[in-house]
Length: 254
Image (cartoon, rainbow, N blue to C red; front, top):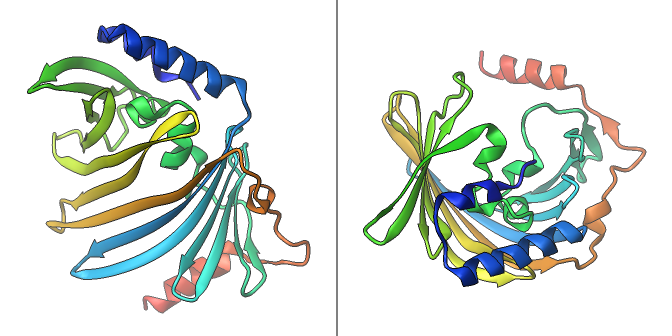
């Protein structure tokens, strides 16, 4: 994962900010960080509101543990530093191994900010490069374009206030808005600043519909030990065959 400081040269910043950024970057690079937080998510889709909760445990080596709660059920998502994903259900003591493409540490906002990649919200990790930077109505706006022609998202505009990202708009190849993300309630935690409130609006062009998601972060801890950081699936957990699950889902739709 690359550091996004290379983009700082595009805008001349106040000396105090450059000095602060230097010391912040040094502290992030010099320590093996462990960061955890509790998240309450409220989703409004098709007129229905759902609420779920999760506890997130990030390590700077790229490993991630997410303990999710919904109603009376809970589930562990375990991501190794090599990107191997496991899903574990404590209630049934079942595990789904080597799940592909559902989660990476770089997808988790807490991990992005804690590891010094919050300036562009981590999009540089997905082969986006800055194409424009300008001031509009007192705000700094940067435009990033994708280097990969097959990407569904072709362009991202990020708006900054006091050099902190407060809004990101994601566009497809036709210039249509895919997602809008608003970040607020920034607070200093350890050696980084993090938005405690994140609102995401996802648009579904084909259906003419949208989904609104509000994530509220709390109880953020830095370098405080917790057993979840090193959570291991019990040795006697029963493996689940993903093909059987896919088959059952297919049959349920008939």
